[in-house]
Length: 327
Image (cartoon, rainbow, N blue to C red; front, side, top):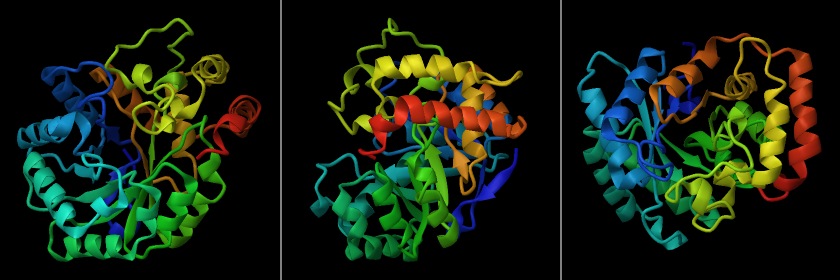
């Protein structure tokens, strides 16, 4: 699979990575055997970038990745984790002592002395503007606790604030055919600054797979049930912030745009891969079949201008007014 450089870090990531939120929690139960099978299938399909977080399953996702990589010393996989969501979400918690403690825990979970890439995990907005926060992150690099750092954001404004910081290697942001606002300013600014873009929630929590109907029922412990209106965390993380009924209808239209040989999910992933400035896209997978199909999107041809125009038209008609003013 093709790889791209993650901005200023000089590190490389496969154009399709693997998001591992599903392997920790909040998407219904995934047992350990199935989780390891997902990781194995992704790696065998050419994925060299795993994204996780200390809060996914309270460390379970990190530990599962560590267990898998211990058994596959032949693999070179860059592991990016995130920190900051295991405490009260106030700016005062984003200080060096806490960073060191969170870093120690993730290094133990992942079984490494130095983490490849650490991202602030959608902290309170003022954190992105705080000099002391970036000084603390620079200290972690100097102490060889981390090789590079980035941020994960909810809004385009937060992304632009972080991109202006010289030490930021990457910005992780929601980008998909139902969330196009980052195309206007964020991706061009990142390209100019040499900052990598990690595209998350690429399938709008599964909406863009075309599998769901208005009658689909998700498990009680699935965020698509309990966070549909932002009850637990930012609503934009669930269905990209799109009203579910609208999303299902728009997703049916989107599925009809898939060229021959593409699934709707692969259309969404290929659309993201084709955007100038995107480093990697990180779909999750609950089973090996999904992991394999996601990785296969990297080998599909670039989308035609006609398909790209049709996707943009759908967004403008059905989605744009719901999401652009909020994120």
